[in-house]
Length: 121
Image 1 (tube, rainbow, N blue to C red):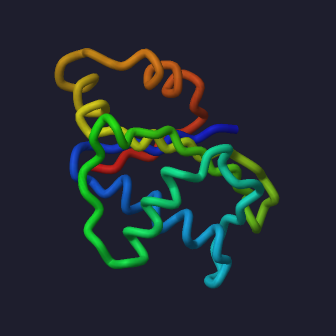
Image 2: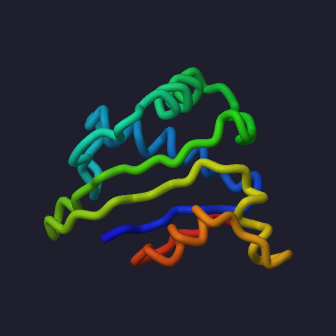
């Protein structure tokens, strides 16, 4: 299955991505999910996590920093696996479909393919 995690401008998406990655990779704290495999490109995730661990405020995502992040995870209780897809895009990419009716093709396709959606407001 595939679940999409998106949000409005300033809702904390990048901070959530950094914290989630840290919890999944470090395994220092018991969580309901466990990481099945790392993303194919960890560069963006490494930068986010480094800033988060340094207690730096994560700046808003700008086009050069955009990235689609996928965590392949397993529910530790049920054993069910899913991909958590987090497009780390500027919040306007999620706000525009609701307010202007404009949506990036890649985002529209991800929304259509998703089995579930978590929306940061």
